[in-house]
Length: 522
Image (cartoon, rainbow, N blue to C red):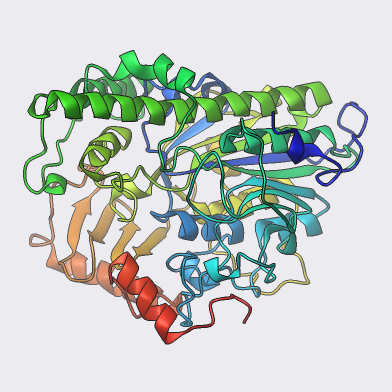
């Protein structure tokens, strides 16, 4: 399968299978797409993810890791170690708004993680979803493609959505791929490409591999045999499964034992439907859709197992560090039944992708050393807050890399998570969020959050209400004012203003008409 991907166009002759020759660790950074907080077995799910679960059982899981709430901003933040607006990706790659913070791709003034790691002596590879190049620049390289931003080799799709059977635009380095085999499936192709990069890596240098899966992003597409394998699990319906996930999360230690499972009626216009409220046809469709979603994750997990096995055969595994996370929470973009899927996937949290409530910004995050003696919190859960801005400094710390002198903007806002993975308490800090005018700030145990610029702030005490069900803003107006002032100061200094919440199509049309140049070249 996918032999076309591994022709002489893709890679040079294979390096011999020898043990790792360098002491600096290899780093495999795995990002999946639109997967909810509870969708891994090791985070409460019935979805079978044995390979990811094994990484979790040997390493450490974070229970308070945060993302930006959406794909492009999360990727920009992960790739640069900065809040997304600062580097030009305040909204989406689909349009260059020609205003600071909203250029639709990563500003060339800010180095990517690949450029930093490469300067530190790493060989750099990427396989999978990019989605940080302006969509208008997809037809020809505009300086922002992966191999133009520090990755030595790249295979994948620049775009953020589309078919798993024929993704567009598909690139091998800077060469457009226009034909794929009949049995092509994107998730497997991403895996196969990563495996080939590893196979042919020269072990005299450390490897940095960014494995950016598209799964389980819409559309719901998976080979039928995988879907059938999952069908029976979803016939009991989302109410039973959500309760089961919540109880499993308690057993795993992710959720305090005294917490009660919340029901989010507001997100359903005032009344969340029970499973029995659906028609038989709706129940059947939800079951099929959820089984397909689960199958997509299980195929991804199967591929991660292949990557791990390839590293073992290559003699690189024990000197490799794995980081696994999702770019945002599950999405309600699949309509009524899709929202009910996301309600399960984001258990126990409120809301979905696109909003900065807990359901949108809570991510499973796993860090594991192949050398198990280095996993100081083996199988444990780290409850310290963390954010995507921490990924770059963590990788630099792993590789003993200083910020390269040739790059500006050394003032990284994030920090290495390695002390946290060893059980060391880290200094408290404030985290900030904004996506299409959904705004939030987390300061200690307090969170100030709102759905968009047209509604009032909600004040949440996360220490007693991590599910964001009780608004305390009227009780503590001084705290609201204090946190709002902090958020505004951050927004003013990070290119966040002015806020925009036009609907998707209206926003695209407005800025494309205003700024016809959408090539992302200036």
